[in-house]
Structure formats: structure tokens, C-alpha cells
Length: 503
Image 1 (tube, rainbow, N blue to C red):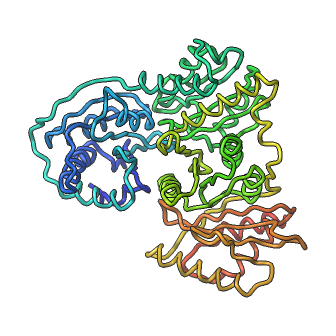
Image 2 (image 1 turned 45 degrees about the vertical axis):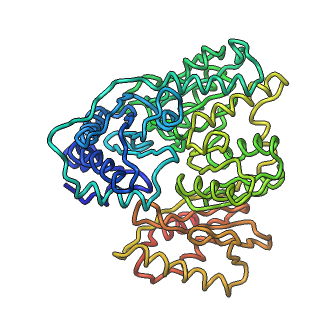
């Protein structure tokens, strides 16, 4: 078996689960099941009942069975929900008639079909990185009894979760009619993941869903990668929306904790646009509220949120990081209704700060229906959003053995240069890596880059945005000169980008 530490991905477990190179095997899953039970026992919070769900990946059933076996070997009763979504797994913890002590989800989100993973969910939410470290250590050393004494029950939780979403739509439109979405054409792309039921729910509520695609679960993902950020996925749903003349298209990843939409024209509304859209809706109801995002959001988004009367609070990447920061701010007395990443992870205070792509889309559909009744379109809320003229993300491999130490030295090197260089300004809201604002071509604050260490890999992502033509090359060239000769980072991607821009 591989070192279990290699399977850590933020606050989840992920790894290759299919083929000769598989590291997340049934044996490993069983140990994580037993380790989870043992870890909670040692924490003084023993678990007696656990719910397990999975997305549509071909390795899901076997891994879920093995995970259940490890739990049952420790005397824990398991309820198998089968095909499910991550948000539904959380909701079962607080929904009458369910309420297990914990929920585990077998999923690798948007990753390729040969990957899989495990998400561990407690009533207060997902595990922190520190808690996952403790669990990993326990899973590596736990003694797994040979006899499974815990019970096994099969049950479906999706109908209860679906009913909660339908109720939210009726509440949002302030109606108790049976079909509140009559007249709205919504096309759903489930990416062959677990979210195909959303289309049938919308039909029951009166929406027209002609053109919906890839609703059937298929863990080989034959049509496109199930990722609302992937260009091929967004191109697919954009084309379908235009072909069928839908008012709106919605797309989910495999376990439905992330989402994006496209408007009637096929325009993609993800990343900064998605954040801007839900921010406008919330700020119209709650002026002055704070919106927590990850660190790579654009300057135009910050201006947009300010113009809608809100406060933009950038924080570290990682959905658990932004959620925890939003919770912290609320506890400190700051009005913060939303934590959202550019990847499409969104958690709302009104929904227990649950990372739930379907709930996000549900709020957008409510607003789309309300605006259509007024003769307007949902995307009209994006009027005034200033988008960068140029943008790029480059990934720089870390060559040093200690990537954390190497990245700190690199960031210090950039900070030292920025402190004494005209036109370079250290951003006042640096909370991850280093964000530098630039004065380009005689302007002020019309470009920026953010350089940070990846949450998962020995890689330093570099995000650059510019409001002027040629600004990306100027900023990339400046950074290259600062870091040139540093043996701890591979700058070939930056050099290639500069040379390509010169042609």
C-alpha cells in the first residue's frame, strides 16, 4: 500500500482507483472506514450510525462496500444511500428521519474517471486539514477486526433532498402553486454524474427541460469531463442551450457540490461571472454584506461587489478555507451570507454554509423566473461587471524537495522586489501567496498577478490579469527577471509564454 498521506487532497482523500496504478483500493477504503470509527472514538465522540453515498464512477460501488465493511467491523451501523450527491449526504445529517452520526461520500468530484476519493462529513461540516491528518494517521495503524458486527441498511436519501430544493423554489417565488416554473425553459447537463434527477424535479415544478443532456449516470464520462470550469464541458452546454433556445442552462460536476450556468445566448456564467451574479442577488436583499471569495478573483469583481454596496473579502483557495473564513466573520459580527470559489464551490449562510452547487443553481433559477415575469433576463444583473482584457494561468513546478520552504523563499524574493520597484504594489488583502498590483502603460492598478503554492501539488500557480493590451507579457517578463536563476522553481512556462507573446 502507498503512504496514506499521499492520498490527502485538501480536506478530502483522493487517488487513482482504477487500473494497475490504483492506490485508492478496496483495502485502503476499508482501513479508512475502520480508522474513521477509531478516530472518532479517541476524540471522545464515538459514532454509531454512518450514511455512505457515491457518485457514478465505476469504482464507486466496490469502494463504498469496502468503506462500509471497515465501519461495520468496528461495530458501526451503516446506511447505504447508493448513488447520491455530496450536498444530500450532508443534509441527511440534519434532516428528520435520517440524522446519522456522520456521512461519507465516495467521489473525486471533477477528476478523471480513473480517480476516486472519500469525503468525511460531520454535522458541523467537512473535516479540516488538521482533522484529516489525524484520521490518516489512525487509518494507517488501526487494527481492523475480521468480523463485521455493524448492521447494513439500503436507503435512498435523494427524494428528501429534492423535496427541500423544490420547497425553496416555492418559498423564493412566494407561491404554493404546483408548477411555479411554468414558462421557463431550463436545460440541465449532469455530465453523467449523480445530478440527473434535477431535470425531473424542474419538470415537476413546471419548467420545460427539452435539450437536457447526459442525465444518465455513467462513470466513464463518455461525453465530457464533469467540470463546470472545463472549456469542453461549457462549450457543450452552451451549444445545447443555443440549439434548443433555452432560457438558461445549468451544469454540475459529478457530486453536485459545484455548478455553473449559461444564459440564453450561450454565454458562460462561471468563475468571476458566477460570483458576481449570486453576489448581486444577495446584495439586493442584504446591502452592505461581505462576500468571501478565494484569492484569484478579478479586480473587476471587487469593483462590481462594491458598486452593489457590498464588501469583497478575498481569502485562501480551497472550499473549506473560504467556508471557514465566512463562518469566522459571522461569529465576529460581520454580515457574511456567502463563501464562494471561482471553481464554482458555493456555500450560503441560509443553507448551513453547505458547499452545494444545486442550492446555488436553485437560487439563480428563482431569480431567473422572477425576472422573466418582469420581462428581464437573469444575465442582465451582470451589467457593469468589468472583465479583464487579458488573463492567463501558468503552473510552475517546484523543484525543491521542501515545497513549503521553497515557496516562502520565492514569495519573499518577490515581496522584496515589489517593495522597492515603482509600479509594483503589494495588494493590501494578501491572504495567500503574493498578489501584486501594477500600474501599466501610465495607468493605475490596471493589472495584477497572484502567485501561490497549490493546495494539492508541488506546483506554484501563477494567475495574471490585465486591463491593457500586452499587459500580461509585461508582468510575466517582470516576474521572470525577479526569479531568473532561482533553482527551486521551473520557469519554463513563464519563458514560453513571454516568447509566444513576442511573436
